[in-house]
Picture 1 (tube, helix red, strand yellow):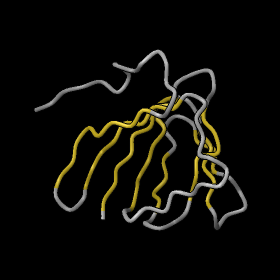
Picture 2 (cartoon, one colour):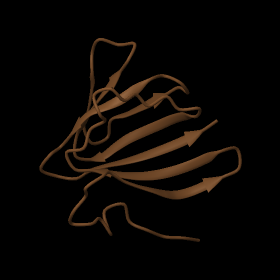
Picture 3 (cartoon, one colour):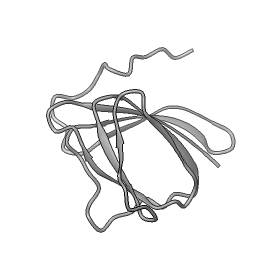
Length: 108
């Protein structure tokens, strides 16, 4: 058993997003805590992952953009989305003045 708290152990300074694997298992299954503070993907970068992903915003706010969609997805606490493998997306922005805490589950 490994206990933890999603809101603890967040550094005062985040030059890059903080990504931590909280649990993983067979079949390329993993659960991550991601902490963003005004971070966004580079303008010419797209996530194109081999695994599917389910992500929820626990605290803060974020905006996701999908390559095949004209409308961005605005996310606030409690909002979640399932992203199929190889659906190209990027983080357009996160709250600049507070931590955005995400929980992401990846599987193949």
